[in-house]
Image 1 (cartoon, rainbow, N blue to C red):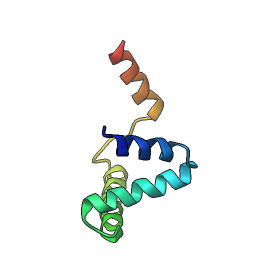
Image 2: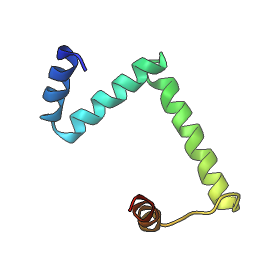
Image 3: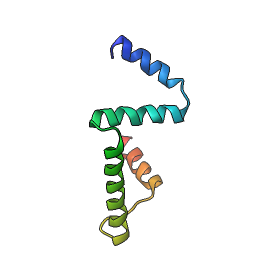
Length: 76
């Protein structure tokens, strides 16, 4: 990481979570080459597809605690 990036990261870490989230959103939008509107639409589409998959039974859902427990077991 270059010096300028390290300085930015250090400064961002001192911001409230809400401000950091806004920065992340802006960076992602800039990388996607949109102003954010297209990105929001893509997230909405993915969310609706996942909800539909869960409601229809095409995918099975697992409790997050079980998922994390499985990961922990695999890492030890």
